[in-house]
Amino acid sequence: MKKIGNPFIVGIEKFKPYYERQKKLNIYDEVYCTDIMDFILNEKYDLIICSELIEHLEKAESIKLIERLENYFNKLLIITTPLGFMKTKGYDKNKYQIHKSGYKINDFRKRGFKTRIVQMQQLPRSIKLIHWIYKRALRRFPQEVIVAYKWNE
Image 1 (tube, rainbow, N blue to C red):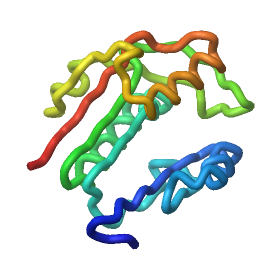
Image 2 (cartoon, one colour; image 1 turned 135 degrees about the vertical axis):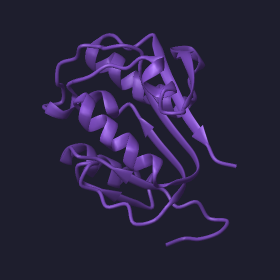
Image 3 (cartoon, helix red, strand yellow; image 1 turned 180 degrees about the vertical axis):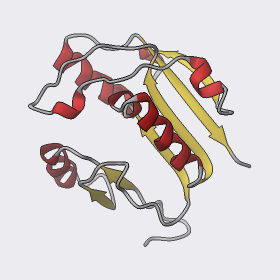
Image 4 (cartoon, rainbow, N blue to C red; image 1 turned 90 degrees about the vertical axis):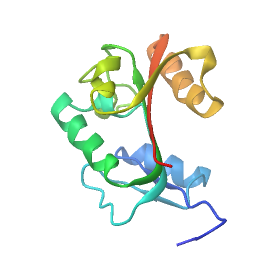
């Protein structure tokens, strides 16, 4: 594993065609084709970004995931999700794209997260790419996104 001074980026993708695409893009130092709930976290990470994922899980399962992530970050944990429930259908023959839950600010605040509601145009470019995919695939995208974060100093 790369250490001090070299960021080490790990990606997790459940849908095999997306996993293959991520491997070809060479964005990650390591990328795994697995369910996030089955991924073994055996060390702490300085930064964990869980972007546009939890809405694809049932609420109880997403809470378990958030609890796991809270135990494995050293400095910063960022979670993004559409504000409220956004009904979707699967696309790209990917059944995992279906939204199963929705979130409000208090879902995060009661867990000790700081939160912001961000308009689409205010999002960082990397997250805008995810929303561009929403727009292309669904012909619409969330106008408002919750950005929830915890920072350990």
